[in-house]
Image (tube, rainbow, N blue to C red; front, side):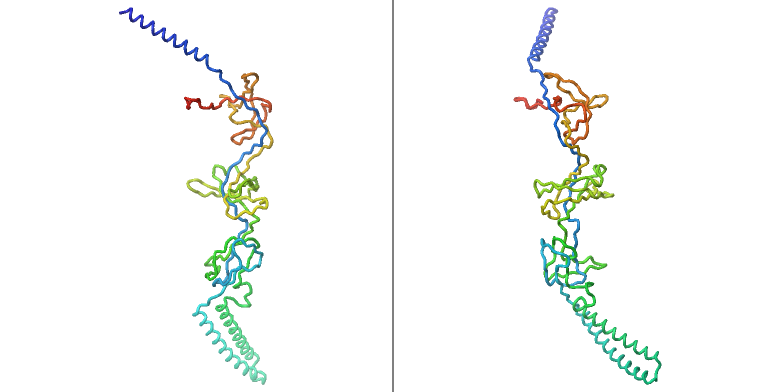
Amino acid sequence: MKKVVTIIVLLVIVALFGGSLYYLYQKNQESPEVFKTETPTTQTIVKKTMATGTLVPREEVDIKPNISGVVDRLFVKAGDNVEVGDMIAQLKVVPNITNLNSAKNQVRQSKINLENEKKVFNRQKELYEKGVISENDFDLAKNSYDNSLQTVKAAEENLEIISTGTTQDAGNAATTEIKARISGMVLDVPVEVGNQVIEANNFNEGTTIATIAKTDDMIFQGKVDESEVGKIKEGLPLEITVGAIEDETFNAILDYISPKGTEENGAVQFDIEGSLKETKGIFIRAGLSANASIILERSTDVLAISESLVQFEKETKEPFVEIEVGNQQFEKKMVELGLSDGINVEVISGVEESDKIKVWNRVEEPVAGNPRRR
């Protein structure tokens, strides 16, 4: 029995020894690991953050009437260019019958009072000329007559206002002619002929007859997240891209950052505005969606490498790369890094343009029959 156990143990030892030899043989047959290399390149590194928003005119004015009425004529449509003073619309006042009748009665009553005061004034004038009454009594009669004249005039003007919406003495204070207040393009005409419009006053913002804007002076209005607002400041350059305008980038300057954020969908957003330097002769429609790249820093034509080539010391966290000094022979070299855009990083010192840098963390292509191997 002991002899059998001894034989089995010996066989197991022999099998393990043979397996070890076979493993070492197979390991020795594998190709040695070959590292690829990359060389530094001259690039422009830009560190930026993104903001989404829209392009809108800097100056946009809603044209509202200062009297209520009905639109009788429209002289413009959306897309028309207008100058200051050009006619936009003509209104027609539809008087209230009750108010109109009351105004007519006031005119008739004031004229009756005027006739009576005129007779009194003429009698007092004759008596004054004969020396029967004093000058003071004559002045009182004349004052009453003058007041009656003024009352008639006021009643007639009130009747004219109710009938037509304005008077000759009112001038531009109230008019049925609606004119452009700024030069620009008509963006919208939300009313039609026959629509009733309400005047703008302290109790009502009034009906918008047309919206006019200067489309050659556009600004970017957008929002940035609270995590990014601390990185930006007024005066930074912007690069604006518009989805509806392909292959074009518009330069702008960041003019405004809101001092107060607003919560939207659980995140705090801050409003920003930027002025477009030029539109390159391209017509930009108001309200187009746009993305703005806020340029935080820029390094032009500098030596740069891929961030994936950089390694860090375990203890000091100092960056280094491995430079090829022979066939698959590499030497560690400390580097000083500059600006990074998240993909490439500027190298201030430590490598030269001709150096070959080891790709140490490469990802291998899947092997046939073993797609999961990396």
